[in-house]
Length: 290
Image (cartoon, rainbow, N blue to C red):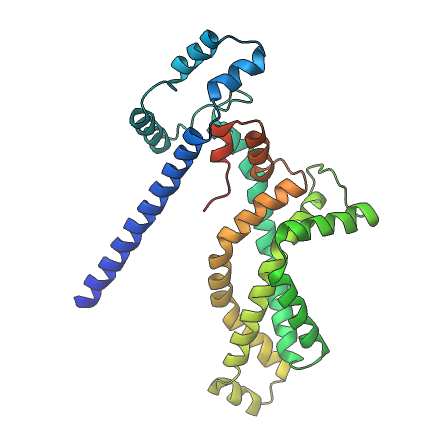
């Protein structure tokens, strides 16, 4: 009973913390929108008429409810978030939720493809590194992984774009929506995570090789490669779940960056475009997740 009670308390505490974090992010987004000094009403009117009068701007403020007190606007904003009404984008006068629906599939495709690269290459690199422990491949991969962990995704994306789309034109600079156009951005997203996951999985497999069943397998005549691949298969699910789960926010953020660098019409490109146009409702809602 005590164990069950302790588990219930921990779950309740996690839920409360989650709600507080979401509330904090929503409140911060609202405050950024209010206190940036940019008047959405003026942006809307000036887009149609550069020489608009103050009366015209004030009319739009009243129409949008921007002249209401701070607490009233905050309450309306919270209500809109809870009901899925994120407001209307200034740039195209479309609901923000529709802009998100248009941009999010591309980012999700990049994230899914990047995680596929992570699973494939992590298993291969870790297994070969264990088999060739202390060899050239293991040492080279150690150096590459250390560099890969330190390299920012946006910088790697630019390097890959310059190398394989400009200097060696294997891929196109402009995205055409094909599977081929997803390879470079997903590789830029996956590379740092592969470097982390491969080292974690290598260490886990080496620790697994100390188990009693491995000694028994060697006594029965199984080769080192067979034992390593079996240990990798037994270890990969848990280790990759842990590593990938902890890196999902990083992967999603990298998805925003890669979409922006490669001109993909995803959230990474739509968000900055909206913010550059001072389209705060759409720009803030397309910010990378915390």
